[in-house]
Length: 133
Image 1 (cartoon, rainbow, N blue to C red):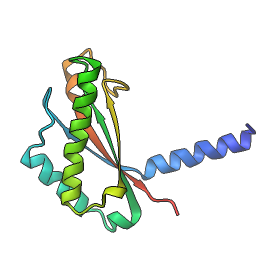
Image 2 (tube, one colour):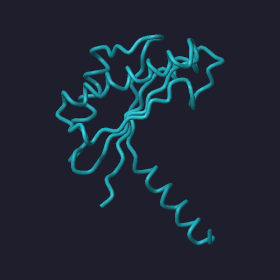
Image 3 (cartoon, rainbow, N blue to C red):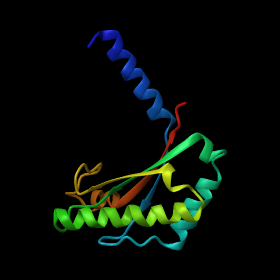
Image 4 (cartoon, helix red, strand yellow):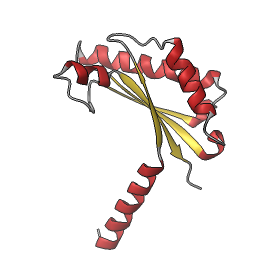
């Protein structure tokens, strides 16, 4: 690949990453329940973004800690993203604007060998990515 093309791709990628807006929803261990506070906070956050549906698509990326089997954590990860997905639908976000990636125990952002890291990995990241025309 020519250097110019590679440089262009790197610059373009970093520009889009900076334009992302993100919020995380955290869960108790083994749970996919979203409490009233976090649900209301997510709703207020979405309402605070002007022209949300015209400018952004939404990606939900779910994670778990490493307690339990890989299969269990994949299911839990999916249930967590579905719970957030449901809140977005209640906020009249069209289903076609929402994309999900359930990582489960794979690809943790924080180390699962500490209690704090495990707590931080029990989450769904709600990522707003600019729509490119």
